[in-house]
Image 1 (spheres, helix red, strand yellow):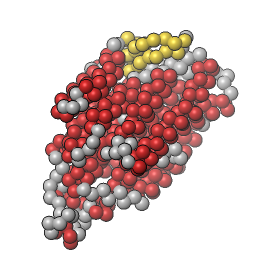
Image 2: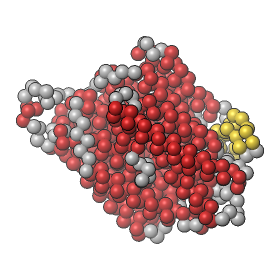
Image 3: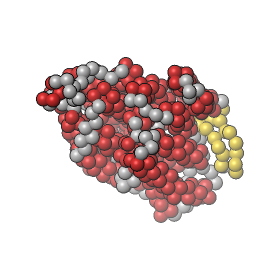
Image 4: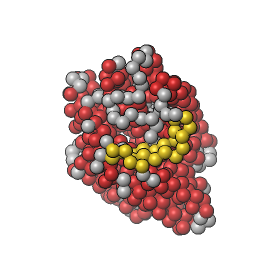
Length: 495
């Protein structure tokens, strides 16, 4: 594998950072402010996409900003794993900026300049995580994401917003400082470096380290990256649903939770390595541990009438598919887990975009109030249905590709238990998504809604919201019909 120094990694970091600065500078001119966000998002995606040919050619791109100690630097790196997350996050930021403008204006939200600034800074942190070359750089950017998204969660500045924001920032920063930071220090003492390994088999821990120490370090890393939503450190995620819908989309699809699972996967594969995890049976233990999250979160989702709450617990469940696939330690399982980063992102952002569109157009938050809305909002609920099919794993939508590889990976690992978990979770996915679509299209409209009272509603949300959610819904199908674009990166990781 050829290592190449490439300054585009730095430019990719500077694009959202510059965007944040321009948003603050143009805050009193809304059209110009949103244009700056949009240009920054396009620039970031263009720079990220320009790296694809080099990565496909087998190169690993590097850029060292400064050296602290031998084996300890602030460095950037782009490889196949980086590209899956970076491409998804940068592209969805483009659509999220467009959608957010329609939502924030249509709902007359205050503090839109602060919102757009923090949104850009959160993407800056997410891209930094994607392109981190070592555990130190990853940790620093992980913390940036946590801090910059707090104002977004507490955006409404009411009691509920502050409570959700406090829980959010407390969970994420305290777990990182209490678990990841000491683990990182010990790994450096043991290994003399924090740089990620060049392949997924070797890891960076030297031979001779006591098994108990390795297991403790591994547990600290898995639990420390609490953005991954693993139970019992998941409750911050539903609490963060007090934020505006574009923030929920950012949290669940574009940046925050993807930063958590990406960081977890990066450490599993490039700090500990497949061989060591297999030797100590860490993969099996992790697979069954996250299986608990997959099933329990799905059961809780069934009980939620609030649409965003149901989607939040769906995210808790779906994130663990990614970790489960990697924990299987088989090529098919790892590829399926990594592919699910993209499949879940396109589907989940569609679902939250739809939730926001329903709220803006019909002022409905609860599923029980959505009877018949599909007939007046066919595009919104059509997109919702496609994304829901992806979450369930129905062909030919993207989620089917993920689950197929996960099933093959479970069989390759001779794990009947995990196979049963995947089948049961798929049934639960259908149980909490299908009723939403059925009620919207076939549910009887309440008698009050037939008149022209406050419950009466006709029509879709504004085009600025409708167009992005239709695009992401179609992309959910596209990644299922044409999975090779993202799957080639996933296969490169396991090759």
